[in-house]
Length: 367
Image (cartoon, rainbow, N blue to C red):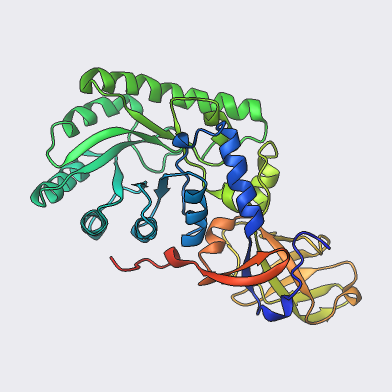
């Protein structure tokens, strides 16, 4: 029997997201081994899994710090009393008010947010000072991705201004270098260290002013192995917990295994070389070009078109397939795929045993 085969597959409607619990455990164990067991250096990003039970598995493994991208993800973590939660998304408009409400509602969790400009810092300062509260903040740095963040060369002035604001405490620096995806490990290391050198210079300048050590949070799944060898960085990979085709083949040096798949059924045999499954845009992340999914038990099936509820694939010989056959697919990108499902089916010892709600796919849980 293949590792992914589900004995009671007839009990699972398709399309479905399935999570192999033993493999999630293994990926968490591998993550800890890569930082030599020093879990204080881990701050996993939960945007991949969005599931309370998966985050609880990480907490059971001794991980106490987390990163998230949405208020719902932050609340999900607070609901299980995660001790330390960073919202790595600058809170603007109602998000800031919702974050302040979380701080008040969940005192067992220490929240923080990222900031990359003085206007947001001043808004947060006023909001938290009026509540006679305080928020830890990290300066968000642009280390080459050109998505958010301030250039490290210009961040000292921002720190000096934020350092004086009531209601805020600047505790460190945050940098995400998601643009670095070299398959060659040595090239990936060179590109990572080139950008990170500017962060270290900035950290030294900030520490000279504040007289306090600055916590540095850096990287994601592609650059995690490089930061894992440093003792001065909190690492924040996220995809590791489920892994996907894109990282498995783009980062072959990383040891993680697939722990989440999508299952689909053949619903039509169109002609001698064409089959159709029920894996549409609504069931697997569609932002990548074809193929967006690879089938473990039908590697010869080549996806060629897709609509909301259908995926059409070309095969050498369609007579080898029949309507109702189950295909087990590895998404090229697992993170947005997870967000397409309300629930995930949990597999243990090749048997579907329960379901976990993908609770943080919602934009709002309670707050």
